[in-house]
Image (cartoon, rainbow, N blue to C red; front, side):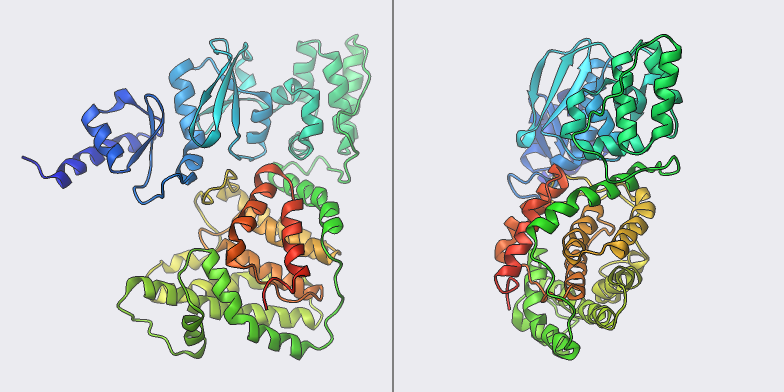
Amino acid sequence: MAAPSEKLAQSLDVLKKLQDQGIVAIRTSSMTRTHRERLLKNGFIQEVMKGWYIPTRPDEPAGESTAWYASFWHFAADYLTARFDDEWCLSPEQSVSLHIGDWTVPRQLLVRSPKGGNKPTGLLHDTSIFDVRLDIPDKQESIETKEGLRIMSLPTALITCSPGQYRSHPIEMRSALSSIPDASDILRKLLAGNHSTVAGRMAGAFRNIGREKIANTIVETMKSAGHTINATDPFEEKSTISFSSRDVSPYVNRLKIMWETFREPVIEHFPAAPGTITDKAAYLHQLDDIFVTDAYHSLSIEGYRVSEALIERVREGNWNPDATDDREHYNALAARGYWQAFQAVKESVTKILEGANAGSATDDDHGTWYRELFGPSVVAGIIEAADLAGYRNRPVYIRKSMHTPPNWEALRELIPAFFELLKNEENPAVRVVLGHFIFVYIHPYVDGNGRMGRFLMNVMLAAGGYSWLVVPVEKRDEYMNALEAASANQDIVPFTRFLADLISNSSGLT
């Protein structure tokens, strides 16, 4: 008779074979009841709804949403294909989001299918799929497949989107419009469908972002085909950014639009900069004084178990890198890395106090911060030296967040664009808030993004004459919820107010 551990190993082997096939949505029929119940009992799979499961980690706390958010899109692709074969596609609005690289998990995923049931299917963590009984585009070029998901082509999606989408989601719609290189594909669909009203809306939308040539081509071509066209701007406000035909990266354009859209709310809700720091030595001395407090709270926010006594020992060099307790060893290495990174950040602050451009200094130096942050763990053999080489080369997911960071291929465009925005930004408050937020939104590293984001924020604070800001671990939930509002809901105000309140209350902690 096989031992319990051997039986579990047999069930895990069945699960692994499914995962090796790329299957995320596991159906009841995919394995025997015995294997299913054994995996469910030991926490290796989780029921999404009756008859459907996803793989999970047994050490994930009850009620944790990370595994579900990381699995959501793959599950949706598998589930919808199982239900509708190839007779389905995502809504035009959701299709636009995926075209511009926005993989935020929606509360309700809208799907079109001639076999749709016109009702929602409840999923985990208050998410759902609503399959609407509607025909889908019948031309092959109107449907694309991305990560297993059937989505409308971008021209088809833009033409099919409701007018209200331009007003309710201007960042997404402008990003999508800016990635259209010319009028050809749009016009082909407008002419085929005799869409004179939509053509007027599309012309107005392209004019809104400064694409006059595309707008004029749409109007003139539709008129030459006998249509009456009245160009109407579907957006509520004129875009403050104009995009040329060369600006076709949806990732970079979306970043620029987000930055410009968030500027005014940040300026409105964040305290004005105090001005240039004159006593540089005193400011740097204050950083030494606040290090222990800053390290304790920043590391605790990330889940490390550190004490101020441990951090003080690390600072003084009175620590044992070969401690026998694995957890204490892990925490001590993190504290040592934080100390080394803090010294590198101080050097960047010194450059800025001496007149260097804050964006340029962080662009030049942030790689050094990161290497110092994880250097002790590399020396100890906990992580590979290759992990210090640069930005991530695989997907990452943020714990409990519906926001999915941009794919790693996009980082090569996004990071230079981010630092260019930071270099050119004249308002210190905007540099502080968006410097932190956009960095963690991009999530360029596999680990350490939160610590790096707070370092970057504090360097920008120094450049504006503000005091160093410690985010208290007691406010972790409020902090993370504010970041989530900005990432998933495109609302920067809660995060701005959160930081502003810390500034108003003696910089959080002293």
